[in-house]
Amino acid sequence: MKMETGQVDEASGLMRFSPPGMAGRLRIAVASLVLLLSFPAIAETRREAPLHYAVNLRGEYARAASVGFNLADVSSPSALDLLPEGMKGLLWLRSGFNGRRNECAWRMDDADVRSMVVAVRGHPRFSGIYFIADEPHPSLCPEAPRRIAERSALIRYLHPGARTFIVVLNTSRYPDELAQLRDAADYVGIDPYPCNRKNAARGCDLRAMRERIEGALAAGIAPERLVPVFQAFGQSCSTAAPGYQRLPTEAEMRAMFDLWDELVPPARRPFDMTYSWGAQPRHACPTLAMADGREAPDLLAVFTRYFTLLVGR
Image 1 (cartoon, one colour):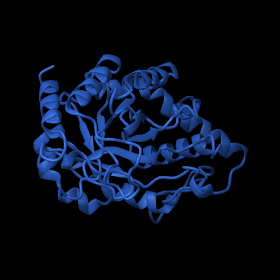
Image 2: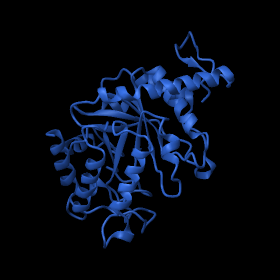
Image 3: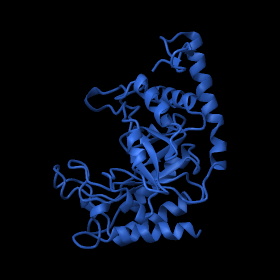
Image 4: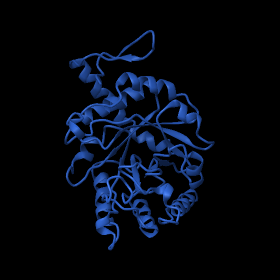
């Protein structure tokens, strides 16, 4: 995206962008500064009821809501119309700059993003949160921080008061990605999935999980901006079987909740995210929706109790 001239199209009322110049680069810097200065205000908009975001719902909105999820993964204005009372949508705008197959570009162009924002920004079931990048890799795509900050600025221009959200992988292979991306969006999620088939006997690696969370805080991401991503999936029935990740046990899930609560208190974090409600054939199977105590641990009961207890805190 090229946020340069900032001219408004009289026909559409939307911003037009042209190739960068010195003045354009200055505007990007100013937009990023405005984004940074707004962060302290995010805590002031903290809702009384904790927010719980589930992805890959596959239309199972009512069932997810019965567990306690009140933010739904949506990717179109029409999906917002289907949400039950008490649930709002968090809009997925695809992704980009993941570095896979030399991919260092957006999968949704600026014109489509502008159209989508205009379509959803006034919807009563929209949360105002835009999920704009899932595990981008600035180590592989050096321009990722700048481009994500530009997209954040575009969305906030079109939808004043909106918030943007990214998830950063930040593995030991790419230890500096949180520092590189910390200022690119309003909310930053991290997904330290500690349960895998190698530690099935000794338990999930909570030590590594703690290090990842503490690393995010040390990188300058305040709890008010940090989104926990809960591991509620394995890969034993995925098409990539036997896969690496495994579904946590009930006790392991409770231990992960406790660790997150210790380091990023529920009253301070903007929301939490669970991956994944529904299955993704290659990446996630089994998942939370399948974990009902029959052929998998009863994680649904664990989540329901956890969310219920948070309401009373």
